[in-house]
Every structure is written in structure tokens, then in C-alpha cells.
Length: 132
Image (cartoon, rainbow, N blue to C red; front, side):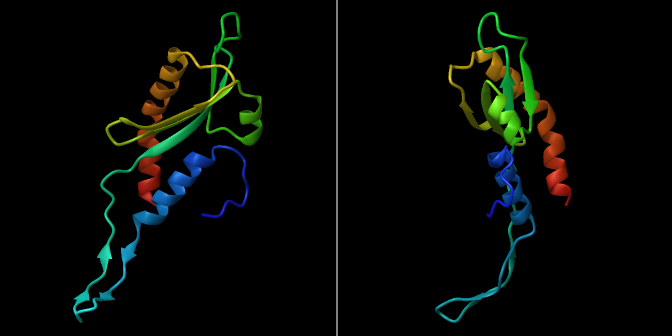
């Protein structure tokens, strides 16, 4: 994958681009060393994880401003955020990846808020990717 414009949320964008590319992939006809032939095989994805990167603003320390979650962050949003959380879930809304970066540890309630928000929105993103 070649990134032409790095404007935040690259992990999620890379995952979604990969899924979109693999969705229509057909493995070509091939000749085996013993002379046998394998006909073209369409690739069938059995799991389709989708991801989102959130910028966490406020709510990371006692007395800080109210928590705000910025979904699908741009580079400038990631720069001003108190923390960055990337979450990927599968069709059953099971977490398959969670990564965060923050100068101070994020509270479990902040991580739970990010996960819950993404679990609500992930089915629509998955449907959009598979629709193409």
C-alpha cells in the first residue's frame, strides 16, 4: 500500500483499503509442477474486521474538561488530542485490535467509551466496504 496523503487514521484506512482490495480478488489459474491445473479461485473472506481511530480530548484526568471522542481523526486532531485510540472489531463486535497512545494512561472508562461507540458504528462501515 502506498499512502499519498498522511492525514491521520492510517491504521484504519490501511485495513479498509486492504479489505476492499481483497474482496474481489480471484486467484488466477495455475499449472502445478506435476502438470495439473488449478482453476481460478475467488477469495472468500470469512471475517471482515473494521477499525476506527479516536482522538480523546479531555476526561483523561481529574478536573480536566468533559470527555470528547473525535472519530476518524485527521492529523491535526491527532496532534491536539490528549490520546489516540484505534479499535478494530469483527462481525460479532469482538475486539480484534486495540491500540492507544497517550502521555498518561487512559482510564478504563475512556477506553470503554471508545469501544462502545465503535461497536455501534462498525456495522454500517462494514456494510459500506462490502457493498462496493
